[in-house]
Length: 202
Length: 212
Image (tube, rainbow over the protein chains, first blue to last red):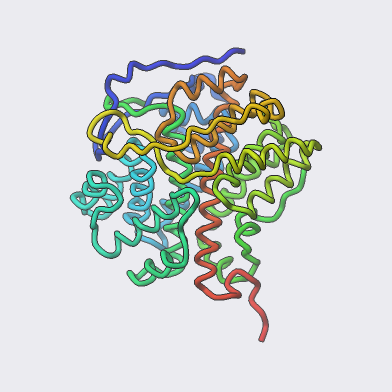
């Protein structure tokens, strides 16, 4: 079998960071929903994810998708303890802003706004970038996320100390590490397997 | 080839022992911890490596760890590479390419428009000519793509996908390769983060609690 590229006109490509909903178009053929087997459904974890071209593309390799999805859910949605959801989303948005993933940043900036009610601060992160002044606590989380996102990785004892000074405990700091690290995974998939569009997609 | 990897690789690379303070903190996100490990096994410890053989996976992983400047992870994945493919020339070539690929990221260009002022130029890595002979066109294309993803993912393009297709990577194999490089980007950062947190907790934070 010889696979080929899926070409898009690119006319609707977003050129700024935004909290608006965006779509995403794959550069390789996703699997077709009607042809998914039980192995693929297990990889998708939630059946509703079969509506997304992104997940139907990733489900070409179902086992890694399943493990990744389950890690993702615990890192972001397990709010029984640890860092508030808003600040996990802030770490994801800051990571995406710094790497330059307009699609990922749009989703997680929106979530940061929903959970923090600080839409203007979130928008400043998108507009001004990771050096925007968002107040002491958010600045520390953004700086830690940026240090984790740099290659070579620049996160060190000073970032840990700064997070402690603004009130994070050890478990909260692990949530920052997990959230920023996970978006270094997500950004690279979103950026390299397709492109964002201002037109809404599945 | 099957192997039995039981130890949590993030714990191994970050020096976290059972019963230590960091072990207890990590246990609060058990599903994330277990699935980070399952992600590792889904990429590297398979009964059937399908379209991407073990030695290719370990070569790419060692390269990604190397260009991140994470020596413990480099040793780990190079040892796996040597175990999967008994060919010292290959290991030496990957090591040499790591040195050629080292730079600082993230850099790259944004879509033309208001963000263009933030465009940042950087190394466009290409495998050396003699290394390409050792690695083969397929692995060489994978290392070039891995470097793009590691340092300047916002430069990713459909042309980069086409380069992989041209080098013999199928859509399914490209998804696996992309997950592998992106997973490493997560794993190495989790390790570095936990190591820094552990260092701040004092000399025994990662090690087993001792009876006194």
